[in-house]
Image (cartoon, rainbow, N blue to C red; front, side, top):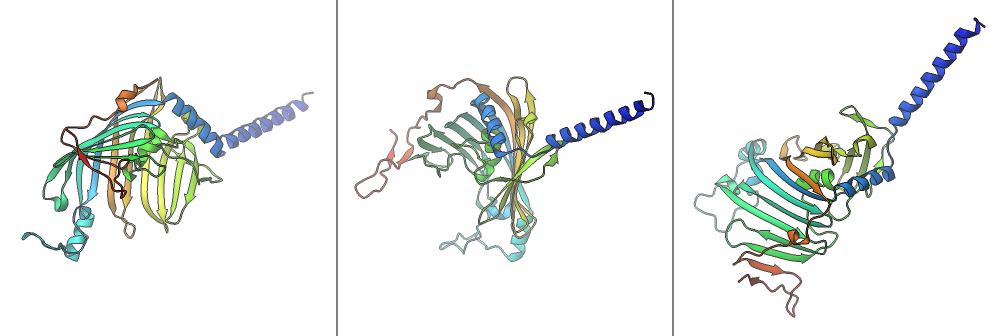
Length: 323
C-alpha cells in the first residue's frame, strides 16, 4: 500500500499538468470570425446609442501643405517653387495643430461635427474650419462652414458613400463600430492566422486581408475583453503604410470603452511620417435611445445648397440659396 502511494501522487501530478496544459492551449487558441462577430454584436447592442466628445491632436508633414503640382498659370509675385532640398527638408518637418469632434451615433443614423484651426496652403496662416455631417441611413447632408459662404451638399447614401470613412477616422470606426455594416468596419475578406500574438499580456487573435494594394492586419483581444480591436496595420511590399492602436478602460455600466486611439500614416518609399492623428475620448455616454430630431440639420441663412436628388432635364444639380 505504501509502495503504491508515491506512484498515485505522481499520477495525479501528471494528470494535473496535462489538464493545465490543455486549458492553457485552449485559452491561447485564436478565435473564429463567427465568435468575434457574435461578441461585437453583443457590444453594439449595449452601446447602440452613443454621445462622444473628442479632442484631436494632428501632426502633418509640412510638405503636404505645399503644392507639388506644376507652377500656377498666374502665380502671385511672392510665389517661388520648391527646390529638391526644400522638399526633402519639409518632408521631415512636422506641423502640429488641434481640433475637436462631437459625435452622435445610433446606427445607421449619425451626426458629427469637427472644428478647429488648420494651417493654410504653404503655411501662410491658420484658418478656422467647422464641418458637420448628418445621415439617417438613407440621405447624407454635409454642412461646411469654413471660409466664405456656408455650403451644403445633400445626396443619397450608398454603400460607397463617404459618411464616416476618412482614413483619419479609421480607429474611431474600429473602436466604436466594429462589425457595423452601415458606419463601421467589418471582417469581410479577413482570415484568421493560426497563432495568437500577445499585446498588453493578452493573447490576441490576428486577422489579415490582402487586396491589390497591400495587406491589412488586425489584432483582436480575447472574449474577456469583448474582442475589442487593439491594433491595426496596413503594409505594402513589406513597407508599413498605416498603423493604429486603441486603448480601453472598463466602465461599470458599458464594459470596455475606448480612452485614446491613434493613427499614423507613412511615406511609402521612406520611413517618414506623413500624418498622425491622436484622439482623446473626453466624454462617452451610452443611452437607450436618441430622439430622431437630434439627427436633423438646420440650414444657416445664406448657405448655398447642392441637392443631388433635385436635377434639371439634363441631369444637372440645381443649386439654391437658403433664404
